[in-house]
Structures are given as C-alpha cells and as structure tokens.
Length: 195
Image (cartoon, rainbow, N blue to C red; front, side):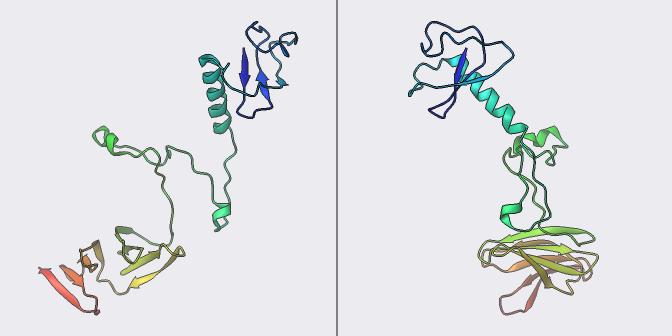
C-alpha cells in the first residue's frame, strides 16, 4: 500500500506489497515491511483509495497526539500552552448534563489570588468580567482588552450572584446587608430587595 502525503513531492511507502496499479517509478522498489521510505508522489491524488486516505488520516491524528505540550510561565500569546480538545479538566459529574458539554471549549485560568471566587458576570459593552471574592469583601474585574485584573468594588458587602441588566447596570446579591442591589451608571446604589 502506498500512502501519498498532502505534499505533492513526497509519498510514504509503508508496505512491501506493491500493487501493479501504483506508479511504475516505485513498483520495483524493494522494501522490508518494518522500514519506511520516502518516494516521489504523483502530482494528483486521484489514485488515492479509501484505505490509503484513512491510513494517512490515522497517522496524522496519531502524530498530532504525540506532539509535546508546551508549558511555560510566559504571559505572552506566543508562549501560551497548547490546548488539547476535549479539555480533560471539563468533567461531567451528572450524565444528564453531558449533552451540554462543548467539546472544543477549554478552561482558561484568568487570575489567582482569591480565597473563594464565584458569581461571575460578563459585561458585553465594557468587555469585562466581574466576579466576587466573598471572604475578602471585594469584587474583581478582568479586562478583555489587555487581560488586566483589578479590584472593581471594595467593600462589596460580601456580594455574590452578579449579573447585568439590559441597560448595563450591575445587579448583586449582598450577603452582609442581606439585600439585592443595582449599581447605577452615576455611581448610586438602588436597593431592589431587602431582608
């Protein structure tokens, strides 16, 4: 069997049993079954049969899974580790939710340093992510523009359950004051629900 690569000048001959239907340039080549030999490939891929196509695909996938994963502490996009899909960190705990798992999505760590972080909310207009660091009584903000993380609100009254309304105002559930509030564009705070 002859496997032709996608590079037009090379083909990979993996089998010592050569068929008469293959190119006459390699029909007289003598090979041992356990050796590989690079051979010139015809200009077209019209003579590639289904078996050859599947073998090339399997070899490409096998080769891709054996590539080393780069892992570095660099912060630039050139030094980011390669992400494998599906991400093994995404685990389905309850089988009923397996249909919601997105196979080409990965977990990306944006920041570390919170004791207990939750209640994230995305602001599409401002292109930032807000979340609560409840024990430290603060809200944090990640800017999509430059991956910068800073304190968004302190004190936050141990807030959690953040979201944004259709006007872009942030709503939060405050544990400390036991209320639901809306932060207005002018900096004011409106109580929506109280104990």
